[in-house]
Image 1 (cartoon, rainbow, N blue to C red):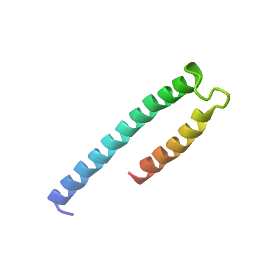
Image 2: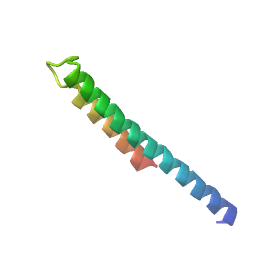
Image 3: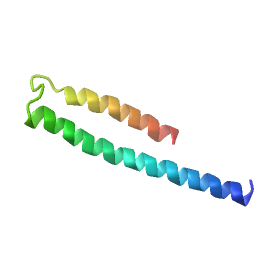
Image 4: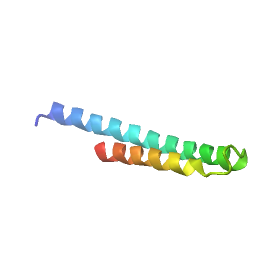
Length: 68
């Protein structure tokens, strides 16, 4: 592998990691927002729907982490 190819590969990996970390932050903020909507604003309060959304979203985030 040439030096140019190694540099390009390293830059690509850094870009992938940045994107993953951004998704983790968005997931955390989004999860808090969903809990607030369900628990504080009482939207669909009879059922804890936020847990299912977070579970699905967390699964997709895990897939992203595995693939990057």
